Length: 361
Image (cartoon, rainbow, N blue to C red; front, side, top):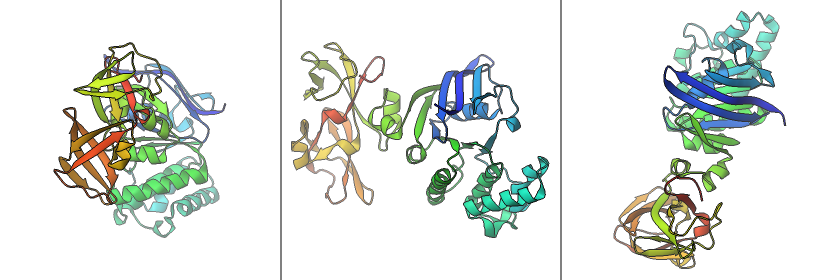
């Protein structure tokens, strides 16, 4: 298999502090990879190591099969887009796009051709003579992407490029970046703390925590089969519901509070012993209501505490066995505070985790 980027056993220490810990990451040719995690998890640090902006403590980095562990950023064949637009304010858009190419000594005709192509792809042709001060945030970010684009490289690295934009612009540019990848088919590694960006853009997502990759899988994989409690709680909005209990009846029943849920339909990765303390996770959108709930493998009467209308859907909060349960349903279902309803779910769509190790069962 052809790998565009390979990170092998990468470790980075700042003094006595271990920031990245024996990381391995294989990125296929033309893949769109998202590094996802909360602030301080090491995702931007890993990207900067791949870019050559940080010297690693141990391990190796390969780009297009070439060992670039100690190569300068300019020798790695990458184009990088930062969170801050990092544009030269005194230069026009054309000047910003062509500056690096001029410094590299490219012929004038080729520079013009690359600038024209990038401007056409990003739809910034009418802006070429403007200076950054005369551009909106979204236009500036397009120019920043264009500056990476003109380098005509195989690998693009994005460090939270949309975080400075408002919600509408973020949504619009997210679509543009996806279109850009579909058109160019270059390898792209994208850092974000926004799970919506990750789920919509990525071919695969590397979810990071404390300098360690927790799970590296497709959006569907991390959503439907999270490998541990952290991934399960991090992906999804509203967050997954968790119920703490134990397995009884030879592992056939999950007990919490005074409730007993049959788990015969659950596909265990490894069968735990009877009495094992476990955490059951159910996503809000997998909770059914009314007649649908009655058909589920488990149903229970509840009283609605809070209702949040969200337009096309409703998010509501109740309690089951003394623990909070959040669920989502269509706005066609009229709910109000104090309503008594029947809720249910199929255990096969849930996730179970060992309460001690927090690993998926």
